[in-house]
Image 1 (cartoon, helix red, strand yellow):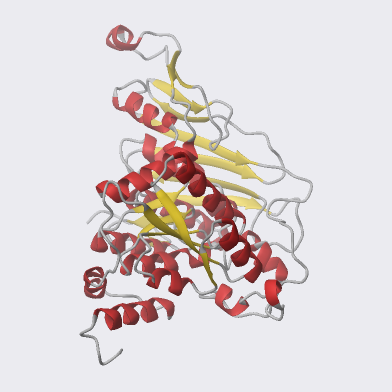
Image 2 (cartoon, rainbow, N blue to C red; image 1 turned 60 degrees about the vertical axis):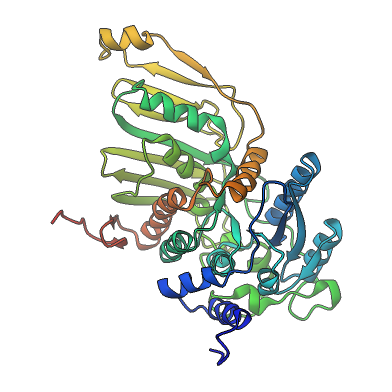
Length: 447
């Protein structure tokens, strides 16, 4: 640590170095970091300055969406910095958005004019960059999954609480109206006690999912646009020689991703936590599946199933494969009825309405008097969910309110899907100890 810690600059420098080296900051250090924050207070009429870290496929998409939002809503925001370890991506994004480009994310975070950081790197970097940004006083929009591990998710949640920064997880489907309409319908008693939630995420393509295009000239020995800072990209992951497949197709490997669970099931588990009366940690999680079709050297399964039980007395059942595109309806079953949020089963696709189906054998006269005994269709808002998600984040930056997919809701979704990854890898049922906030391989009995 610098001997000149009395200066604001050196305090911030210490925190940046600590985050970059993987040091887990204590609660006192986090509070210290919050005091040393350099970001300005964003006023109602101030244009929000954004830095985007990671401008590959998803990061470029997000940068374009935020830029489009700025075009449609003048003075709302602007991208002033972009960062990527791949020189070509960095240059192209910087030129497109008239922003300054960086190879090192710490330079973006160190800029005092940056109000928020958009994190769109591979999963294994999410937590480190988000923590560094929060400690520097920045608000954060972090792509799903929130983190790569449960420990990272817990640390991130603590840091958001301590720093009081706005933190939105980028599963934009949670800003779609159907989950919030379903939550109200459930709260009104339309399906009674929740028993089971179900969903799926199925896709299919000739190439096999995640086999994105490889730039053959790119790498750590590449010149000019072809240069990739491979050592930095690996970051907290195990060191290994340059591997283009791992760099361009990272979701196929456990070191950087949880495969279907973290890439796709986050879009299902997070909305379910919004529908339920309150976000919940699982009590027990198990998973199954395998590499049935795409035997291309990948480590993650191409077919994956998740089953989770919750202490409140209901279960979650999810199925997915990368080798078949037929979905099942996304719904929640209750003792008095079922509510179907996505009849077509595609959680990221728009829908016109949600439907409630009463259980005719058990509903009583009071239920019939209030809701009737026939199928009920409830219309939902049709506005674009990505635009709503961006608008919500930027609005919360001004009001300091909690965003739609806040860190606490995302934490509960992350624990469920990360436990399913561990269950699959270990081949056993796992249990969540909510008092100790850790995974165990046996049920935890009440004290």
